[in-house]
Image 1 (spheres, rainbow, N blue to C red):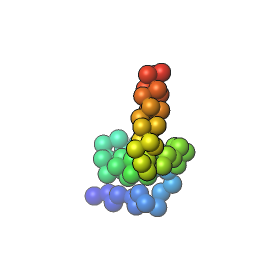
Image 2: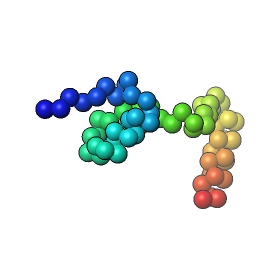
Image 3: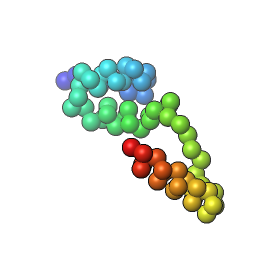
Image 4: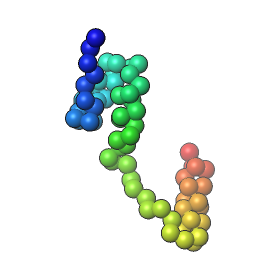
Length: 66
C-alpha cells in the first residue's frame, strides 16, 4: 500500500500537481480548499449595520453585472 504524502509540507503548486494526478483523493482536494487562494482579496467582516448594508449593496451590484 502506498503512503500518502504530507499535504501540509507540499507547496500549493505541488499539491495541485498531485491532485491532477490523483483526482480521486478527496483528502488532498480538501487540503487544497482549506488553504484557500493567497491571492484572493480579503474583506473585513461588517462591524455594524451600516457596514453590512454597504457590503450587501456591493455584492448585489457585483452579482447583477455577471
